[in-house]
Image 1 (tube, rainbow, N blue to C red):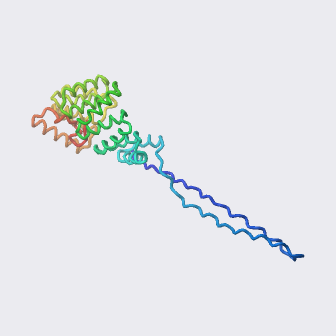
Image 2 (image 1 turned 90 degrees about the vertical axis):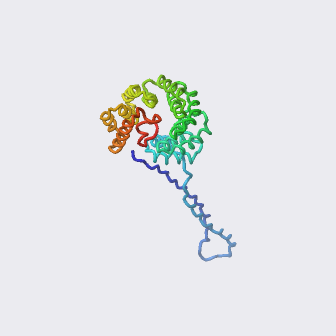
Image 3 (image 1 turned 180 degrees about the horizontal axis):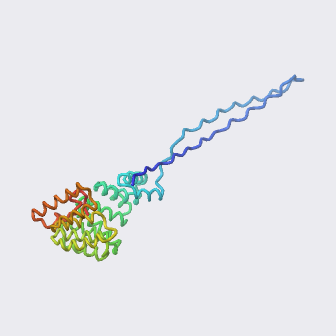
Length: 294
């Protein structure tokens, strides 16, 4: 969707005009029969007050309808919109979370982390803010720093698979595999049909050589209508690493342009030639071509 510019209405402040005092009545003209008392001097007329220059009122925060529309913007336009909202009200946690999400989508993970850290000072127990800062640290491959906020989020929402799933990936990046495995299993137990939980667990298994087990989990994930392109490309990677390149190519072409398909196939062929049975560091197929983490 094309970005839409939000236009601030300009309100003109009406100038207040002060009316001049009415002029004193002049005596009726004509022949005077006798001397009349001198008329009181007319008061000096006051000059009208000039209207004040039109002033633009201070900008106001977006309406709920405008905010709802902004959530459909592409990342660059969304970052501009939410950045303005945060500038108007630095304590607006909702706007800070949305700005952080936009920055993270553009790969600006450090800026995303800085933005959401400021929001957590305002509201340290905000679940969505804790999830967002965990994602930002994971995006920087600094999972160790995502562990604490992910744990806090899990304590706030013990039946929500998302903080546990983030905690699992954070443990992976911190090279704490036993804890990562337990967290992955817990996330899948909490949400057996959630594509994200299944895909994360699958890539954990693939990174440790269990390509068949990873494929089974990924096929469950891609069967969901909520499966993303990244999850489908994770399946393409796992299929390709098992030597089934034509099938991997068909899967890749569902979501990727030809030049990226060619790049990914070249990587797969090189990995197979070197006898590499698993993706390095558990990275997803998209991350190999610059798409980021899982």
